[in-house]
Length: 375
Ligand SMILES: Cc1ncc(COP(=O)(O)O)c(C=O)c1O
Image (cartoon, rainbow, N blue to C red; front, top):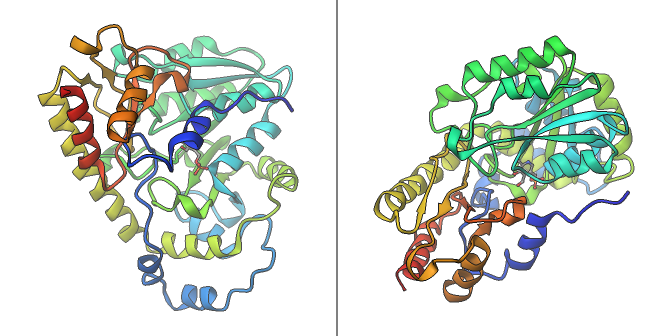
């Protein structure tokens, strides 16, 4: 299989562990292991202390699958398949769900593997482009018009990376009804679910909303445990999950045994875990709201509705006139050790950058950005 480089991941491979402040990470500040273990109940403490480091069940630990199923309204453990990260789930799902002759519609800009893997698998990919001028809104009518007889899959990431877009309940219902009527599967990348700023905005999971819905979840974002590398697909389409399970025999075979138990502890204690994540996001959003209000000379944004990222435009006036986001990010990291992610990594050259606000050092990172802008 030939596949293009994952631009964002190549950028992070260069910078993530070489800078003082990541002002563009999408994950939440990693949960401390000691604090997680303190949340274990008797059963999970026993599982952790008595763990043997052998291979695990390839579909995932039965208790973990049952706990994940509890995140959905209509699913049981057999509707869940555990992967090593959301990334592996995307790779397997797109490889088995689409191929030559198939057409896929994917929200764009977006997380590159959501469209790149589909294209590498041989499918024709249409981008459903989101526009800042519309508040990044998902346009279900445009998706309807883009459907073809050979469309097999619609891929929507919501809450959305990088824009923070979250469809309204009405838009989401319109989309799920459209897919159900047309007999097309909906792949819902919901890795930022539970980070809605107003809980009332939380959408029905794709796997609950329609029989051919496939939900993607992960421990990395809302649950703040990216280092566990545990993700999952959840769907009532068990035949599709079985094909994904067979494909996974060629990638990782089974999940990491310690990571599964730690994920189980985290999911069982999810109210505590999510409350911490939501608190971090709320505090950081207040800092960013102040930045946007006070410094229109630095950037302007469509305020995100959910998640841990936003996609503002740099103003780039005064001494920055004629610069683009790439140059600004390169000089900022040199001067202040603060990393922004230029839109070019999403295939959009110009003035946009992705901001990430899930980390505890955000106030220091913003101070560095302001110093550089004032400099
Ligand atoms: C929208 C989206 N989907 C999937 C992933 C992959 O998650 P993970 O790296 O935890 O596998 C990411 C990571 O940034 C993401 O932003």
